[in-house]
Length: 406
Ligand SMILES: [Zn+2]
Image (cartoon, rainbow, N blue to C red; front, top):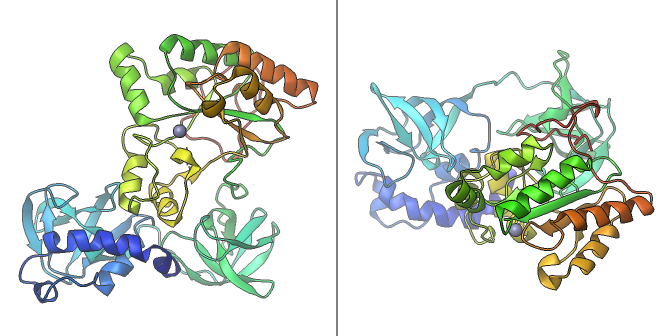
């Protein structure tokens, strides 16, 4: 994970500066002369927060134990530097819930270092790929692909990142691979799937996925589109904001996400309030992804806007980014005919972007798009009927399968 530090240092550094003065007790000498930079220990700790929950952490400074996971909460005690404390959980902003001296409270992740992982295991000498697997320049899907390692290849292991990814060598190159798609010599195997392209997400079929973001204009419009999709064997992907869900819940007592899932449709995250996540720190962006809204394993960043800090946030909340491969610009044209035409021009496997508040999200538009695609020999992702695709339409799982049964 150290390799990612340089990429994020400006964002994290700024964040660290803000918390440092308020966080550390006044007796810490490094703070007294003025905060000029984040301590090195804090820097290395802060890049490990996306990892598996450590069993315990060791404080790298005199550190306040607080009643909640931010400096806004009351101080319960000050934990001396170098103390190892047991970790109970982790907040979405990275703070750890720990126990110390008979008390339970929260500490900043910036001033601790992980002592032991909850599932450590010795570093294997080599691993075997269980799928065609991307070798990347760093330990997450946010990094550039160097090569694709064929399924069944054994590669030598050099290191493991705090998130579990392995540093390996393959075909003369050194890079990182996900630990989810390799098996160690012991034969331990984890569920497999090829890594997910951002633009088409978990759809690995030739069927076209129609996706609708943001928020419907009315409950009746939403219900009409969802019901039409279900009864005409279409599996849409909807990406409502958290504020949208809250609003419909407050006005009608209806959970749009649950209603869509009940009709065999897929639901992904679209942040709480739809900001451009790029200017936000990793923590602030993660709060947008982990706050009110859809909690699942795929999310669409507002405006499709992604940078290193945004990737950091998605990694932190354990969500994969799913953008799109075809944009109808429905919000711009506001034209039903143009929106239908652009969606109907999709190619095999495309993820088509539309919005619930515009012209594509209506029974007649869905009907036309499906018919037009069929005329070009293309199918639309089908309503969920379980893994075998047979029988009645079923409620979709909250977590999307790594390969969508389109
Ligand atoms: Zn949006």
